[in-house]
Amino acid sequence: QVQLAESGGGLVQAGESLRLSCVASGIIFKIYDMGWYRQSPGKERELVATITNGGVTNYAISVEGRFTISRDGAKNTVYLEMNSLKTEDTAVYYCNAKIISTTLNTFNPWGQGTLVTVSS
Image (cartoon, rainbow, N blue to C red):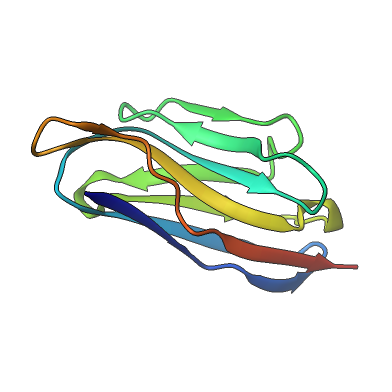
């Protein structure tokens, strides 16, 4: 099996920064796209940013220019650098990835989520 584990959430004030990390573990052969999603109370989960294994990135309009997604292939890790945070960025942030296991099965796991709270 494969798993994702996020870290780095917390409470910050508007205008401050946070860096989220997500590590993939398990019987990993190859990781394709990795991404960050978020869900606020009463809202559906939404895409924040994705990155391919070739480094091509995609961002939600609401975070473009403020957030940066990156990955470290050697560490099976994806990061989300969040700058100029706004109160509307408050949400549980989830990591997601397309992973091929050493048994050549395809997995699309989600992490457990990490809470980001931005106060005014």
